[in-house]
Length: 206
Length: 206
Image (tube, rainbow over all chains, first blue to last red; front, side):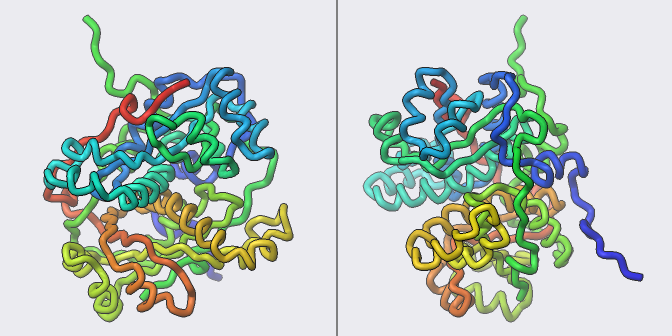
């Protein structure tokens, strides 16, 4: 009799890690009272920052909204279904892309010294590069948050232009999502986990 | 005497895991002769699939290009600097976004049964949702590849329209990057690691 193996290939990480980062981690909306320290947020970034980006441009920027005053500025720009989630979360991270990432390229991408000046006039290209790579970094950060012992509740529904006008008028950062962060109460979610697509449903091998 | 601590907050994963997934992992271009099995690719997906997406839409699709015949179809559409990298890699994953993700929503997002039909006519919105969430999933997959014991060499430079015409004319998938995958030879890279931006350079706390 043939058994179907759930994980036929040995992973390079233990089951506890695979569970913590992926398999049992949940989009969290139920939090304990524990606060999130600056050091905990820094620990998440200090992992996520190593994830690769094109030309090492690292365009992801993070506004951590923790104080009541800052929450009161963010909440009106969230979709109705997300307002209470921001209010309930210990901290809400506004993820944004920085189209001025090229200012750092002499440091970040020293093997091509002219790249900073070459990109300076290419405003549209920079905006597209910033958004694309910041979104990939959002994936790294989600894992980094969990690896730092925190739980994440990502949300899409928001008025990005409103958030940008409220918080990023001078920096020019472009918001694209919010991740609520804290310590999960129990499983962190009142809902059953949604199904996923199997490898055969998403992949083709040639 | 005060010491500066590199990792002031205890992580929820061990140093070996933090190194494997982030801190010492490198964008790889040097590979051993070891092949990459279907099961290894499936193991990477079986972690990455659990990363959250908006409405659980899971729009990331993967074309794994492994045979000489398939490589010969992909290489001409890569930027000149990336052609040899595709030829050298045990397998090259073409990552793509599927604007027809809504076809799966009755299964993936059962709490809102009308979403599939509601999104059907919204072609532009579906393309934007697919691209945004597939990019976030690319970040999950990069970590999943490493957690499966493989190394990743992501690349941006390619003719996406050319790739889409060559491989995705019938599916409508939209390619956005390639990740070379295999087993790293040594560090996997002939270059020193690029610097990263510190938390204080990317984050603001309010």
